[in-house]
Length: 143
Image 1 (cartoon, rainbow, N blue to C red):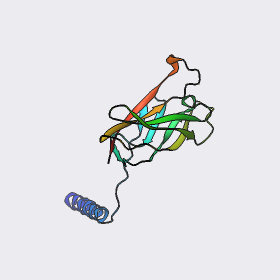
Image 2 (cartoon, rainbow, N blue to C red):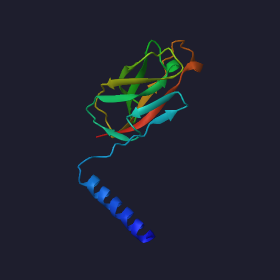
Image 3 (cartoon, rainbow, N blue to C red):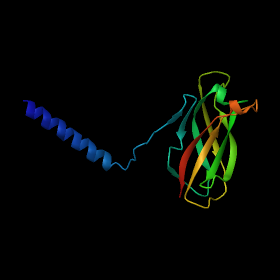
Image 4 (spheres, helix red, strand yellow):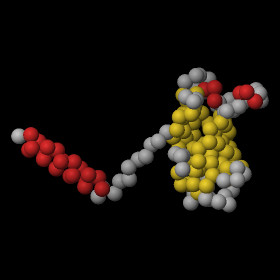
């Protein structure tokens, strides 16, 4: 009896695996990056390959105090830390909260010289005081 159940489970797993493989679907990889419980970056994921001709779409959510006037700056850098492009990304809801607020944006950038770089998500520091600065860097690869 127990061997019959184990056999049935194995057969079901094989059938489902084969069905998935031949369905033509690609599994969705979600690997949000959480930084200091302040900003969660859904896209791009670390070391993701993005088009060297741009633009790159970024998304995630950040606590309301990461924003100022419902936006914060994002930069695309090459491996030499040269800024290739920069643009503010917009909150997709009420940003005047301490909760996470979704954001999205598209960053246009110049063609990089190398194959690697990073995307910098900067806290919008309206005070200008260095102690209020914060940022997180996500490594990327250009294809």
